[in-house]
Length: 413
Ligand code: HGY
Ligand code: MN
Ligand code: MN
Image 1 (cartoon, helix red, strand yellow):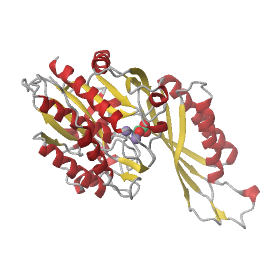
Image 2 (cartoon, rainbow, N blue to C red; image 1 turned 180 degrees about the horizontal axis):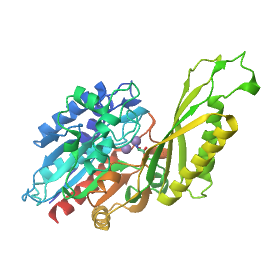
Image 3 (cartoon, rainbow, N blue to C red; image 1 turned 90 degrees about the vertical axis):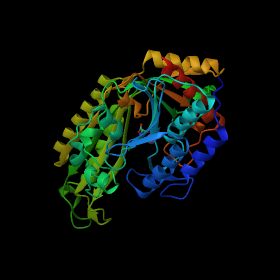
Image 4 (cartoon, helix red, strand yellow; image 1 turned 120 degrees about the vertical axis):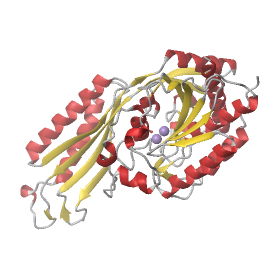
């Protein structure tokens, strides 16, 4: 049976979704539980209703779009990704996996195929860490790797808790009810842009992810002593931002010190108190992102950052507090699913290569409860998390084709 992806429909839907943003296109901002997030989800729900698919929404907003199989009691095959976007991001991170997944299911429906297993498309709530400081809390709660106390413990920069914000967005039920049983999915496949330059550089249209790197996040608070920028003389200062500057460089130095290309360290967020040009900074809060394909090597970097913080605190007479926001294990893809993807790409005459994902994805947590693998497509210059993020229509359509064939294989197994 012929599985036909409707490229025009898929691209026009990606463009329509890109227009639902807090910012003027091409910049996309779509933060979880924001008005743009709500409008995007309503729009997406309309597409699922048009396709005659059943939709379930859980207590934190994860959306499950189900196409029943001929044996509905069998564990489903899952696919999906996210539509939330960090500030000033692009139109393809996550959305290609959600709308590409919907297109794959519609193509399978239209092919007349009858598959044994149900197929479930997930729209995960909050893959990005923007609002609550931790990425993937939707898939973490589904997989049971985040305890349900997170409902009260996680709060946004304004102090609103996850429970308050999910209730305000209309999601009912307990956070405990989000967790899926371990055997809910027989397999999970996510389609995503590479967010790196390799596929485009090598002219290969399909990447098959064999490993997802181990992410970690730290929140570092530095308490010094503030004062007047003119009257507090240099020898008597405990400048929190100067201490922070040394720690930022220590993060970079620690990441580079492993000598491995897979080790990364970034300080992407920093706030200074009181934040006046003529006032010595008394408090700084920073968020640190450290990741590596090798968990032990990543933990070595975290240990060196802790040592550097203790040294800066002693030398500068400031207090440094470190909170570990997350320190997750890496994930290995399932050989069965990797083979199903490579066979599908071969059937379609599409060259492919196996590769590591240095970005984390909801698949990292779905791997805790199901055999998992990911399909990557090229993105221009490897750019992502920027308004000029771009993927070519034929690459997007090819990704959806490989996904549709892979889902069909797995749903017949
Ligand atoms: O940060 C990441 O790796 C993902 O894009 N949220
Ligand atoms: Mn992202
Ligand atoms: Mn993503």
